[in-house]
Length: 335
Image (cartoon, rainbow, N blue to C red; front, side, top):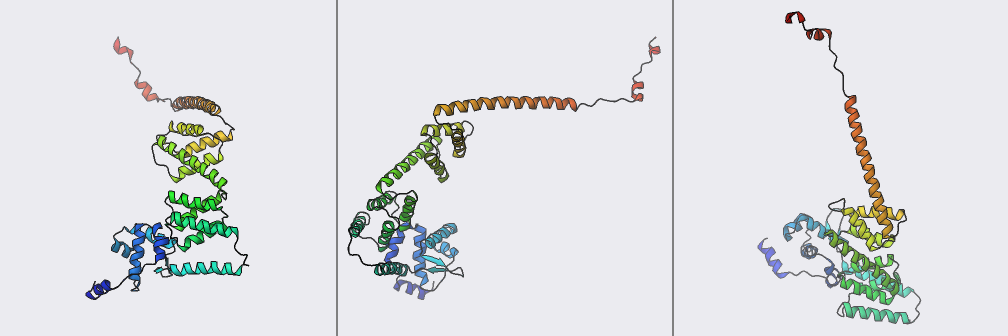
């Protein structure tokens, strides 16, 4: 760095949008935040950076830099042009355009005066802002609440509990994380508090079952394991005792039992219309005895086939006349 550049660095400032701090920053990794701030500084000089430039300057591994830039792209903070170069997105412009679209839509609609629903909406927004955002909530959150109210048709209490749930799960760091949770609730048919209560009760049961199985298997549970357990609890009419029995059966044959094998067992029992633990236990005992008998028959068959093969492989030795004559004894020499 030249002396002139050092002087400029001392006298210049990098402006960071408040919108980035309030709406985006909490949902980004440390590496992504550093990449964004560093690019804000160098972008003023019309200098384009490659992934290797970020890695060398910020001291992160190249793979982590690639992941951080992907984060920024998905968050709508940067984009890649046709030449493969990074461009900063004007997040203030995006926010203003979204606000104007919402404003124009409301202006074209026929005014109906203030409805009780509007008062409920304002009360809800004020309550969420005061409880979860210390009295200062960015405009993007208001727009998200309008989506939850109008498009998802959530009851006010459901919207409030969505923010509470995301706060407990530490998902209030970005609007996208809250929206993802809301989409899941909508897919599960949640609109009222009764439907939400039933859904959360099922989720709690799945979570407790995962903890119980994790302790028994003494390993971490993966997303694939969760899919199996959720599928059992939502689609199969079995108790937790029967699910644990399926896993225990797999542990008898495998040092590291997988839930895939247990899943196959449970689906087999379901297809055979076995419902109680006693029916399943009796079926498994009969199946084990049958497998043992079949194994003995197969081993006996293999042993018999091996002996027969040995006999069939025996070839008689044929001696010629010269060899036989050589074996003749002249008895005269012994007289």
